[in-house]
Image (cartoon, rainbow, N blue to C red; front, side):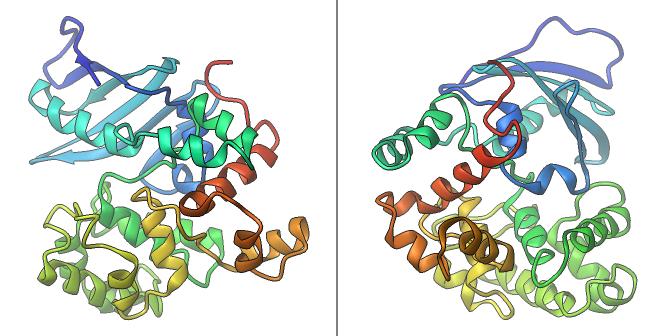
Length: 301
């Protein structure tokens, strides 16, 4: 991937850059892959094809926006922080879009049984929008456990508003906020002790750092399910966002879909009928994406 910066324009607290990709990446398909773009602090403008969010860089808070005119790059603009923030901006955008994920093996694995899904990856699909850190994806996953999507949106907005101060909070901010305020003010309910306990343990074990960045090799399925309150669904979902597609994150909505569309009583039967092994969750996600109205349409047709 190459990064290029046009000549500076405007005030010192603005910047812009272009991030080039080694493989096609479709911003619209990445956003459509799951619901993260509808959770704070994301903003998604489908008409403009513009994805943005507030981010903190050292002691400055700014807004980073991404848009696309071709599948081999994205244009990035930011306000509220200067050119010195560019390396951090680029690093975060790369993570959001999984820019360093090589889709070659996934395409080969899906090609025989799920040719349309494999073609979607070749056109720039197959990536799921991620947060700025593993910890953000972990917290948002916890906020989807045994609740409605509207409640997930509300709880996420509460975390961004108060412990985060307008951006997504890091692990130390969540611990400092405390279980009591997570319960009473952010309305996390039973998720509050789960989040506090898991955050504390992951920091003590060194599998995440103070910024919430995680070690994918140490954050495996067995480790995640060893965290109190984290079951197979949450672990599989977190692993999927680390590009481990071997398990479908099975919740009530997934089970209902499988029964409705595939006459299956659970994920095991669905998996048994697929020949894509380590990419079964990706195949499932892409099948769901294709079935959405306009789901197979991306930024550049």
